[in-house]
Length: 448
Image 1 (cartoon, rainbow, N blue to C red):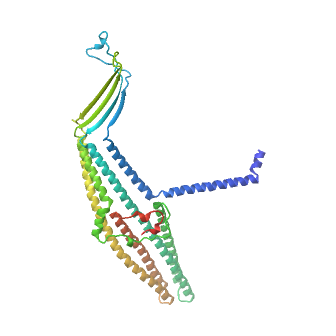
Image 2 (spheres, rainbow, N blue to C red):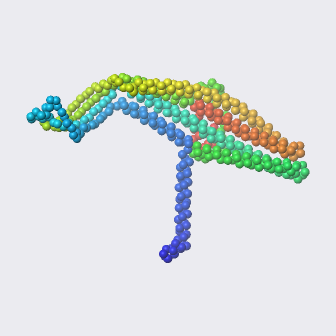
Image 3 (cartoon, one colour):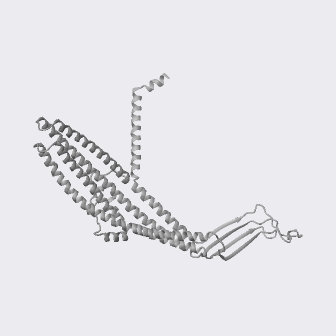
């Protein structure tokens, strides 16, 4: 016990333990950082594209299953008799010197079956599966368009919030100058104490608004990072004016009908449903199989040890009564009718969306122009009001109102630009014209 105590208390041993502990903490931190890095690379963008890829794989597997029905089926089987009895009428096994057994013989056999005709049911199933594969491809393209629109929304929201934060900070600086001016004018006898207090109160209010804008910016940065899998760059240059937007409503609708994946996906799904109807109708027809059989039976009689049977057959089956056939056909017809309605609804939705987003963009573009002029005039008014307050022509309340008008105009302009650009991206997404090349990797500053 004394020796252990001395060893633990040795300064060299204590120093060594500290080094080992520090190394362990460094390794744990590195592992934690690696885990964080791995987690952050799994973004919403990649996850949702991966889910669509799984749906495509499932559809292609279903196509392979239907195509496999065209090939022959080979079956190897055996009957191993554990116990049994063969009865004859009249009972020949009781005849003296009879060679008939009283137990069923065991057998082994090979059968090859090839479906020659099934009312074209399998061919219709194959065509339906192909249409479903094409529909999943179009659905994946539509998902990518939606993801690019959502990525643009994250970028534009971040740009808007950065603009609002910068505007709030400028307002704080301007109000700080106004507060300093009011205190100096109080000293000179040109301002009252209440005016100084009002200026100080407005300064604190603007600081609170600036902090609120900073929190909103932090949330936007977090949303950007979660969606894209990497932190937002310091510079974002997104301008909807540089996008290839349609010149008219008619152009927007025509491009949407020609390029949007949604109408194409709806058409493929309707075709698949129509083929399913034909497949269900084919179940009423007879089936014809080509069958090749080989069977070996063991110990059928005391005199014969094995019997080999070979046969090439044409097997035909005609359904006389099957209560499930008509309900299956009725269900397939109802689903085909529903897919037809879905297709019409999709075409109407896409064309209406293209019109709405085009009109929104034109209206918001004009609104942005008016707000830019408002910000310009409000900036001039604020500078002039500050100089006039120094000259005693206006009170601090007049200056505060002017500065409120300026920050309101700047924030309204930031919101209007966000809505204008989102309308442009939504329009392009509806038309299926968004290009993901500008969003690849971390070079977001190269966008548009």
